[in-house]
Structure formats: C-alpha cells, structure tokens
Image 1 (cartoon, rainbow over the protein chains, first blue to last red):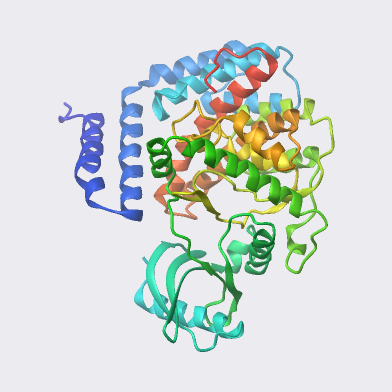
Image 2: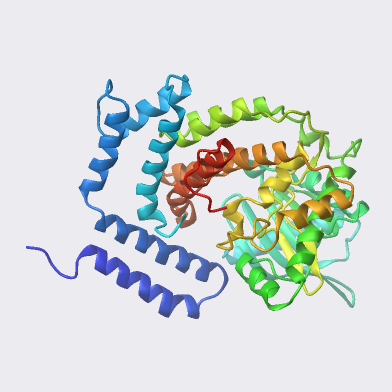
Length: 115
Length: 346
C-alpha cells in the first residue's frame, strides 16, 4: 500500500509552492535560498522517477568496458578512475564515449535540458 | 543575518580600523548585511564624519578564510594598484586587523550598479550595443590588469606567491581530486589529457584577478563600473583570467555568448589585443579546460563539506548536483579539441 501523492509528486508540488508563493515574496538571500531549495526539490523528484534500471544500465556500461573488473556502481567507478590515473586504458575514443554516456545519464536527473 | 551583538562588535571593529588609518572621528552605521558566514561577512555601511556620509562596503574575514584567500593587506594593495592602472575597482578606504573580533577588515567605497548576473544580462539586452561595450571594457580592463603586474612588488603583494607552471597546476588539481574521497573519472581523464597539450609558449607572468566573471562585475548605464572580489588574485598566465570569464558556467544560460553570457569571443579578443594584451589561443583553450576541472572539483569539495558535516549550507549541498554540468562541459571541450566530439553546444 502506498500513500498518495507519491514522493516525487509531493516534491514537485513543494517546488511549485516555493517558486510561486515564496520566491516573489522574498528578497536577497532568502529569495536565493528559496530558488535553490525549489531546484533541489525538482532534482530529488527526478531521482524518484529514475528507477534502479538506470543505475543498472550505468553499471552494465562500466562492466562492458572493464570486463576484467567487478563490483557495484561505486566500485566500478572507482576502478575506472584508478585505471585512468595510471594511464592503463588504451582506447581513448571509447573511454571518452563511455564517460559521456555516464554523464548524460546523470544529467537527466541533475539538469535534463543541459546539452 | 548577523545577530545584534555581532553587529555592535562589527561596528566597533570597523571604527577601530578606520581610526588606525587616521579617520578617528568617523562613526559607522550598518545599512545592510550583504552576506554573513562563519568565516566571512560583507556589510554595507555608512561612514559618518561630521556632515559627510561616505557609502562603503566592509568585509570582515577570520584567519581561517585568509588561509585560502588573499588577506586584507594584499587585497588593499591590489585595489591601490588597480586604481593606478585605471582598472575599474572600488576605492580603498582602509584595511587592517581588528583584534577584538579576531578578523581582518577591508573597507572600500560602495559603487552603485548591478551585480546579479541574470539582471546584468537583462540590462544589457534592453540597450542596443551595451553588451558589446561591456565585452570590450572587460577585454580592456584585463589587458590593463595583466600589464600592470609586471615588476610590481609593492607592499602586500608578497603573499600572491610565485606563478605555477601548467604542469604544477595539474599536480595540485590531481592532489585536490585525490582528497575528494569519491572517484571523479571525468576529471581524472581531463587532467590526463591536459598533460598532453600543455601550452607551447611560457606565459609572461602577470597579475591574475582569479575570479573575473559575470557576478563579480558591477555594471551600470555606462557599462563596467567596477571589478569585485580580488581575493583569489595571484601571479600567473593571463589566459587563465580570459578563459575563466568565458566558462560556460558563468554564461547563465546564454550559451551562445561565450563572454559571460553577453559577449562574443572575437570582441573580447579584439579589445584585449587593442589594449596591448597578447592572446594565445592554445593557452586559452588549455585554461578553459583546466579551470572547468578546477571549478568542478571546487563544487565537489563544497558538497564534501556538507556530507562530512562541516557545513549545513544548502548552497554547498546543491553544489554537489552541479558537478555533472562541469563534467559534461569538460568532455565536450575535450571532444571538440580532439575532433571526436559528438556535441557542439558551445
């Protein structure tokens, strides 16, 4: 049983309330903070929307790229980071492509229209 | 907002610094608190001397903040130099250490105008030619700034340190990256790439503002009224300042206008060269990528302060979710530089 509205919808409503009711009625630091909080509500709402499948997709990309390594998303990211640090990855174009794909997945949450 | 006891102490501290610079009859009234933090506060104040009221800005900084930023004496020396070189900046009134509150105090003239980036952009959009004029003024100011530093060894400038070779700059970035406690493979990849394309020519060492960008410019009806926040100034490659001004992050959505979201690169370059500056494209490209990494890591460090419990600032928390924008920008810049980019957004 899930209570409604869902978390993501509540966060969007919170962002809307902040943007429409609070931001126009505040100034300076309070207005700036209200905008930041409204934006964070939307970020978290999008995070609610993206299900575990997206993380799984990111993990699969990393596993395909680093077949000799294993681990969860954080561990695989750590592997990638340390292999780049020691210049152990030869296919630079493929690496660039992998990094961009991962970034695009994360941008879908943090800033969907950023391109 | 600072508390009332704080404000009383701040007024006393500002009056003490004014007195030590010879204005012992001055009394101070706080008009507004522009920002108030644990290590730094900025106050708008009126300095009253008889019938004369001087509008000023007072910055109070604890020793913790001057560990990473220029101290008040250095910033005071920079403001004096800027005035001599006709770089638009606030006029120094007084600077010193206020023992009772354990803070350095810098007092400078208050300059009217707009600083909030999106409002600046709206102002410029409403008057034909004003954006191009501001772009040219930025190029001119930076050329003057970069020219004036040569040989300047005035009091207070010793703290600016010695310039770093680009390779050493990358070493420092790598060190900071290792301290973030979380892997950022995109920045690691960027650092690796930058080591392969170091600028060909050694830069002439200049005074670098360090934070010359939309948000630190006071803009009025005549364009650039003053450049703010000299606390990141250092000696280095002039192209660092020009690249920073053009970072996508400081365009505030106006991505087609690389110079602060209001100007074209060719106009900035023409003004900079017209005022005697020397534009080095390879160094400009290099610094654009290097400063993208620097700022991305800076945002990640702010987020780390939040997650480590050292800060409860919502701004620091939000910074963590903006790192990905810098990662995207960096990959795009590298892709375009190498001719393998899939995107050409900026």
